[in-house]
Every structure is written in structure tokens, then in C-alpha cells.
Image 1 (tube, rainbow, N blue to C red):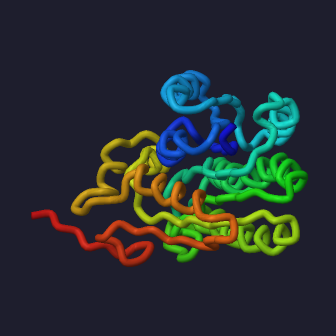
Image 2 (tube, rainbow, N blue to C red):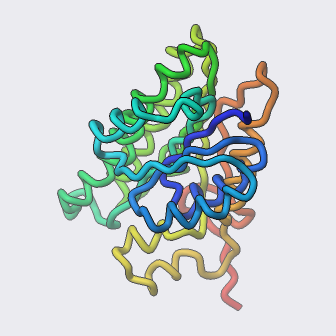
Length: 251
């Protein structure tokens, strides 16, 4: 049987593209909140590999622990965990940020990552090997105005990745932090609460990354020889220089 990869946030964007990319090399546990979308993805990847679906919200710790504990025997030896699920809600200055938006970002981006890791790490420790890939953001490396809470949540992911790498070294578990720049997914649509015009404007005047670009990088990192650990990777589109600097052409 192929090694087993568990991917959170697999119903759209980077998670969806990653599941499709890894299907040739891994058996998959795909996770997400939307049952219909998970079933559709399962039908696609099942043509290449074995797949198991888990419908849960990463903010629900007890559900996560229960689902992982009850995994079928063939899917218990997880060798790759991709903590991809997360979100951005709103674009407000710190005095205007809404408490619900704040809680959504902290609960999913930070606590959700920890909850899933808490459930999976013991399975890797039993095998004395494994690989965790945490999807951070350039926002975790550079704070920008009106993104304070989102940036803080992704900075936490950066610190968690570093700490995991230290703590899990004796157990043979590798940890990689991947920080994308501008990627054209439903990220901005969620941030702007469904406002398609605002979401579209984020990517006007330049060619952003696609979800498949990040999936290709995840695949590269995940398929390195066992002795190779890529600790950190930042990925920009050609037109981006840092978190907020873009070369845009509107001609």
C-alpha cells in the first residue's frame, strides 16, 4: 500500500489541488466541512488511489479525536499530515475588527492546526517517522495594516512549525512550513464575505499563483528522500516582492 497522507481543507483551493497531485504517490485521507465536495473529490482521486473521507470542522477538537481514533486499520499509519485548513475573515484595522472574525481566524488557523496535529502525531510517533507540512502565509512573516489578526494567526503557525521541528526531532518526524504569497483561490472571496468584486480586485493587473503551483511545491517537499527535510519555503508569484508590494500592469 502507498504511504498515507491526511489533508485538511481538501474541499477547495490548495487542499483540493494537493489531493489531486498526491494521488499518484499516496493513499489519501481527505478532510473538510462539506460532505458533497469531499465526495466529489473522492470520486476523482479514487481513480488513482485508495481514499477515505472525514467530514469535520478543524475547530471541533472532540470530533477530530474521535474520527482519527476510529480510522479503518488500512488508514491508521499516517505518514504525511498537511495542515492546510484555515481562513481569513475581514480586512479591518485593529479597532474595527469584529470579534466573530477574530475568533474564526484564531480557532481555525491556530487551534484547528493544533487539534489535528494532536490527533495525528501519536500515530507517527508509533512508527518513529512521519512528515508534517503546515501551510502558513507570507502574512506570517510580514504584518500588514488591516490584517493584524490574520497575520498573527499565521505568525503562530510559523512558530508552531519551528517548535514542532524541535520537539519531534527525537521521534523521526520532519516538519515543513510553506508560506504562499498571493494565490488565486476562494481566499479573498471568504475574506470579503462573498463580495466577488473586491475579491477579483485583489488579483487584477498581475498573474497570481494558482492552487496547483502550491500543490506542486507540497508534492516536491513530500517526496524528498527520507534524510532530506525542507524546513521552510516561501512562494511568490513573479509579480510579488513581499507581502504588499506588487508589480501591476493595467494597460
